[in-house]
Image (tube, rainbow, N blue to C red; front, side, top):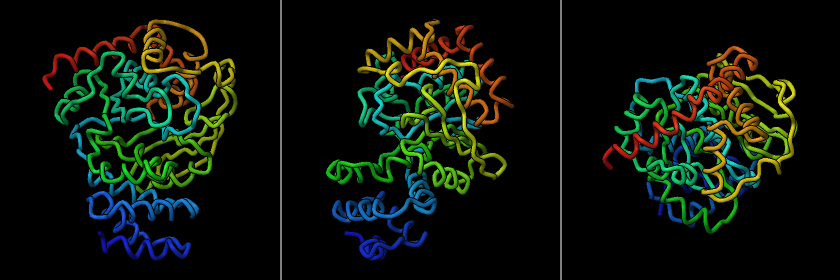
Amino acid sequence: MSEAIKPALALLRDGEAPTPALLDQAFAAILSGEATQAQIGAFLMGLERLTLTSDMITSGASAMRAAMTRVDTPFACIDVCGTGGDGSHTLNISTAVSFVLAGAGLKVAKHGNRAMSSKSGAADVLEALGVKLELSPAQCAQALDEVGLVFLFAQAHHPAMRHVGPARRELGFRTIFNLLGPLSNPANAQRQLVGVFADDKRGPIAHALMRLGCESAWVVHGHGGLDELSLSGPTRVTALKDKTLSELEIHPNDLGLTTAPLDALKGGDAAYNARALRELLQGETGPYRDVVLLNAAAALVATAAAPDLTEALARATTSLNSRAALSKLDQLIAFTHRTPS
């Protein structure tokens, strides 16, 4: 049982927000394994009763970063990652975007996990494509150097999360930990596109990214509740650039893309989604290609790799049409199979 978490629990019991220092104490106690499951559950439930703040997210992400297994790399990496939990069960969008970005010449440290609420998370679809997930930190750094892309399997890099798992499963609803993964990239990606499952999370997460030292980012919530930029309507964006936050709205028509209902992106299990992803990289057209291009263009602007969406869309399209994105998938598969476990 943890004494360090008790002051935060006392405030939460009374419906009051713990101070940043008490939040730091509480998250440290949780991720060290010192807190009991009852204390963890009470803490998470207490936070859910309050309005989410950047203090809460910053404290939690800082604790996760302190406890994670890092990947040391000299490269300025980018990450494209959603919180998940939007209930849309779409094809894997951000994973496909990662290959498009790598094909456009960026160093991509794609952080992700197995599915929690969907049928196919990033880890599931990559495994179905033939990518081996378990790489050492040194091998991850080598992949970034040689391939320009690596998948950072959250289970391998955040061992402290095993202390939180039982309480989260028993609670059975989303908690603040659903928001912290995209802010805890093991390769310290300083430029990001982050999708969130609820629009009221955009502001606090963007503020937290700024406080955590992120150089540039877009935090997005798409039409239809998507934690990606959406083809079905406008996407709301909180943009971080030069330590300043701004609000904007992106519609697929702004880029000359055709709108499509969310059902047009409906996915299946890992094998189904893997086939669709490879077919996309091989030249398949349709709504899946369009939503990947939309998100890739946004990521290029969000990470300061392109000055505007028009140029960004052209670069993303070239990556697909030239098969550079497909080549990155094949290179990653080959790398993980020739690298000893």
